[in-house]
Length: 106
Image (cartoon, rainbow, N blue to C red; front, side, top):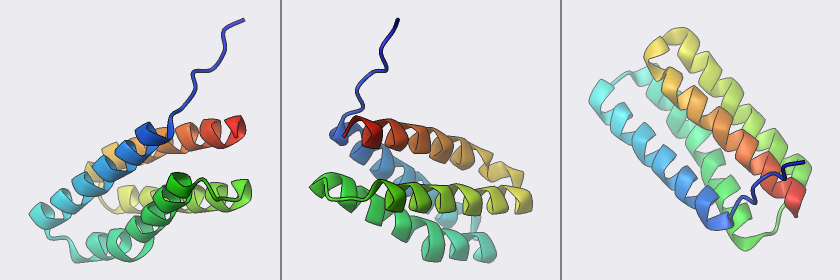
Protein backbone atom coordinates (compact mmCIF):
# COMPACT_ATOMS: atom_id res chain seq x y z
CA UNK A 1 0.00 0.00 0.00
CA UNK A 2 1.30 3.43 -0.94
CA UNK A 3 1.60 6.01 1.80
CA UNK A 4 0.50 9.61 1.32
CA UNK A 5 3.45 11.95 0.83
CA UNK A 6 4.24 14.15 3.81
CA UNK A 7 3.21 17.73 3.20
CA UNK A 8 5.89 20.11 4.45
CA UNK A 9 5.06 23.31 6.27
CA UNK A 10 7.39 25.28 3.98
CA UNK A 11 5.58 23.97 0.92
CA UNK A 12 2.19 25.08 2.23
CA UNK A 13 3.52 28.52 3.12
CA UNK A 14 5.10 28.88 -0.32
CA UNK A 15 1.86 27.74 -1.96
CA UNK A 16 -0.21 30.28 0.01
CA UNK A 17 2.24 33.12 -0.71
CA UNK A 18 2.21 32.39 -4.45
CA UNK A 19 -1.56 32.10 -4.54
CA UNK A 20 -2.05 35.44 -2.77
CA UNK A 21 0.50 37.11 -5.03
CA UNK A 22 -1.22 35.77 -8.16
CA UNK A 23 -4.64 36.88 -6.88
CA UNK A 24 -3.30 40.38 -6.23
CA UNK A 25 -1.70 40.62 -9.68
CA UNK A 26 -4.92 39.52 -11.41
CA UNK A 27 -6.91 41.96 -9.27
CA UNK A 28 -4.72 44.85 -10.37
CA UNK A 29 -4.85 43.83 -14.02
CA UNK A 30 -8.59 43.13 -14.21
CA UNK A 31 -9.94 45.98 -12.05
CA UNK A 32 -13.20 44.17 -11.24
CA UNK A 33 -14.36 45.92 -8.09
CA UNK A 34 -16.84 43.33 -6.78
CA UNK A 35 -14.44 40.42 -7.28
CA UNK A 36 -11.48 42.36 -5.90
CA UNK A 37 -13.49 43.23 -2.81
CA UNK A 38 -14.36 39.59 -2.14
CA UNK A 39 -10.71 38.60 -2.49
CA UNK A 40 -9.40 41.52 -0.43
CA UNK A 41 -11.95 41.37 2.38
CA UNK A 42 -12.84 37.71 2.63
CA UNK A 43 -10.31 35.36 1.05
CA UNK A 44 -6.83 36.89 1.38
CA UNK A 45 -7.14 37.69 5.11
CA UNK A 46 -8.18 34.10 5.81
CA UNK A 47 -5.32 32.75 3.70
CA UNK A 48 -2.92 34.84 5.79
CA UNK A 49 -4.51 33.54 9.00
CA UNK A 50 -4.12 29.98 7.74
CA UNK A 51 -0.52 30.69 6.79
CA UNK A 52 0.29 32.13 10.22
CA UNK A 53 -1.36 29.21 12.00
CA UNK A 54 0.66 26.73 9.95
CA UNK A 55 3.91 28.68 10.43
CA UNK A 56 3.67 28.70 14.20
CA UNK A 57 2.11 25.22 14.21
CA UNK A 58 -0.59 26.37 16.57
CA UNK A 59 -3.96 25.52 15.13
CA UNK A 60 -7.17 23.68 15.60
CA UNK A 61 -8.03 21.22 12.86
CA UNK A 62 -11.62 22.40 12.87
CA UNK A 63 -10.59 26.06 12.64
CA UNK A 64 -8.28 25.48 9.65
CA UNK A 65 -10.85 23.27 7.95
CA UNK A 66 -13.56 25.93 8.36
CA UNK A 67 -11.31 28.72 7.06
CA UNK A 68 -10.10 26.89 3.97
CA UNK A 69 -13.63 25.65 3.18
CA UNK A 70 -14.89 29.24 3.44
CA UNK A 71 -12.15 30.41 1.05
CA UNK A 72 -13.13 27.67 -1.37
CA UNK A 73 -16.83 28.58 -1.17
CA UNK A 74 -16.15 32.29 -1.72
CA UNK A 75 -13.89 31.52 -4.67
CA UNK A 76 -16.67 29.37 -6.11
CA UNK A 77 -18.95 32.42 -5.83
CA UNK A 78 -16.36 34.45 -7.75
CA UNK A 79 -16.17 31.80 -10.48
CA UNK A 80 -19.98 32.03 -10.79
CA UNK A 81 -19.51 35.76 -11.52
CA UNK A 82 -16.52 35.33 -13.85
CA UNK A 83 -15.26 31.94 -15.00
CA UNK A 84 -11.85 33.46 -15.71
CA UNK A 85 -11.11 32.96 -12.02
CA UNK A 86 -11.56 29.17 -12.19
CA UNK A 87 -7.79 28.53 -11.90
CA UNK A 88 -7.86 30.15 -8.45
CA UNK A 89 -10.70 27.85 -7.43
CA UNK A 90 -8.63 24.87 -8.56
CA UNK A 91 -5.56 26.10 -6.71
CA UNK A 92 -7.50 26.69 -3.50
CA UNK A 93 -9.07 23.24 -3.82
CA UNK A 94 -5.59 21.70 -4.09
CA UNK A 95 -4.39 23.86 -1.19
CA UNK A 96 -7.35 22.60 0.84
CA UNK A 97 -6.41 19.00 0.18
CA UNK A 98 -2.79 19.68 1.13
CA UNK A 99 -3.82 21.43 4.34
CA UNK A 100 -6.12 18.57 5.27
CA UNK A 101 -3.29 16.10 4.65
CA UNK A 102 -0.93 18.25 6.73
CA UNK A 103 -3.23 18.59 9.72
CA UNK A 104 -4.02 14.90 9.61
CA UNK A 105 -0.29 14.16 9.87
CA UNK A 106 0.02 16.38 12.96
